[in-house]
Length: 178
Ligand SMILES: Cc1cc2nc3c(=O)[nH]c(=O)nc-3n(C[C@H](O)[C@H](O)[C@H](O)COP(=O)(O)O)c2cc1C
Image 1: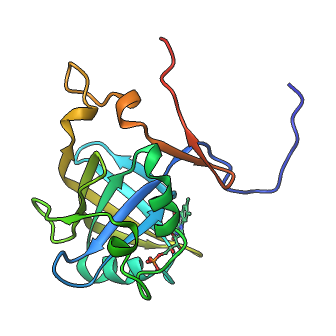
Image 2: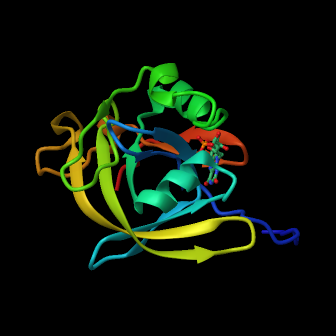
């Protein structure tokens, strides 16, 4: 396999695309589309999200130290685009997308009702990096729509239809035979 050496870049693919909701259900709230997201620890379960300090969501997450990672289905890509191209500083993204804010079990940040999976997160540590701040957070509650589970109570990717991102494009993956 002949290979080219490219300049250093974030060429890791595919990465998940998620909708992170933050703020407070009855107060200021926001939804931001993020792709710089990953699992960083098993016990306790933890995720890391990379958010630029210029984002309105950064302001809300820094203040409340809570957020919810909502996993959109591939057919929610329009809402993903809206939440990734407009700022909560100037528009209420729950209103512009038609997504519904519902209360969580452990955090004050709202969940997105229409996303099949919601991970409630509490920030443990913030790492300042040159372009983004990395919020390391513990997953304190998980909500899963029964309709995306298989007969063993696990996520069925064919039903959850997760969205991935690569090179400025959205990907929809399919389950391969083992
Ligand atoms: C597919 C996609 C992935 C994105 N990933 C990130 C990310 O990981 N970190 C980030 O800071 N911004 C990311 N953005 C940009 C923000 O979603 C965008 O700037 C948004 O308008 C910020 O909204 P806010 O000001 O309400 O927080 C992404 C945008 C798109 C479309």
